[in-house]
Length: 242
Image 1 (cartoon, rainbow, N blue to C red):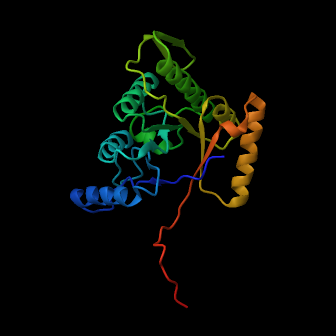
Image 2 (image 1 turned 180 degrees about the vertical axis):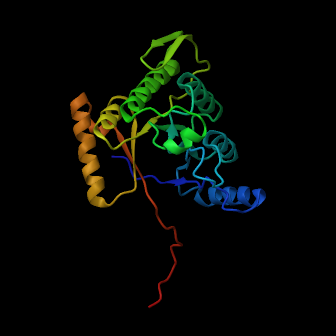
């Protein structure tokens, strides 16, 4: 059984401080977690109202180059934002250039407001799940095969090549809670992610995930479990006062 590993989910807004201070805060945070945490993570949204918000792929790539001892991933990419084949190529390039430090986290997408603002089509939930599955099929094919042709209901590629191949193949992490998404995760993902919840809810989600694995004929022990939650980091010698 693998031990518990920790990752830091980096802030995506600048908190109304100047750019230089913002970048220094990132670099200081990455320095603090180095040696104790295994990975760093960045969100993938375009806006939340009028808040300052960095584009996830560009920001993560910049920070990944700054810290070569950590793995990096998105928590999670929105499959609505990017062409699936181009996204697979982007991930392959990042994995190749980073010498295997990229984790491919992805989800179906949920924030209708930002899609409307950026003129991105926001289909019903069932369609978004279908699109995500086709995205994963295209991604896996491009990472592993040559001359890929895929004719899906929502996405197509024809005679597509993805060279150089990612080495190694990045782990695929899917964020999911609902039954259809759970089954998709069981079919295609290496890692499964859920957002922070109370212990009883987490236990329920794990049981549902194990049921989804059983339905698709997968050993649930082969699906790595990840949880995004808030925590407080404090010095080991911190004393409490009565």
